[in-house]
Image (cartoon, rainbow, N blue to C red; front, side, top):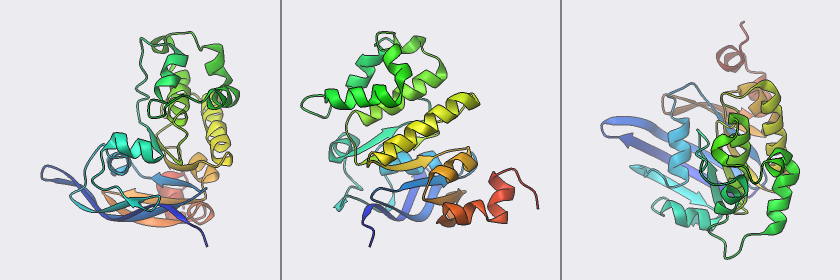
Length: 238
């Protein structure tokens, strides 16, 4: 039987009077890649930010690796083994690529040279640019850096928010190959992604979020073959 690494139950999140998340349930088993699909404004980023402790829920529970983390501060959640690569990359522009990567290991007593070298192996562009200021990188290179930085803390769960947003197709392929490599190394991945087809081809399972509620869930194959999902998210008409 699969072991749940993350479990979210009856999660509600509000911004003032606006209810952004309305009682969702989801789980991620150890070793899985799980994707959350949905249109802009569906609540995907809010869900990820609440799971990683950047936002607080008004109701519900979040359990990670057997621990209740609903009220745990974000920096302590990182120490438990969860890492979040946010939408918009948010690299430190005045630091070099390698300095940015080392910042990702701030929760560890000592950064792991082996992990750094592995990141350079799966994202060789970062090694080529390691002394370059992060602010001078292209958008795709900054996204690679954001993912690499998130991996430096050696997480059990990697949360990725829109990793391919705004990137050229050739760079999207690089990013998704890196995510596959990360997954195959044993890291569990929770992925929010506008590129539904690419996300479902990579993921084991998926959830569809609409206006703060989960409307569909199932294996990637089930969602890829669903006429409703095809019409709404895969650009196919009946």
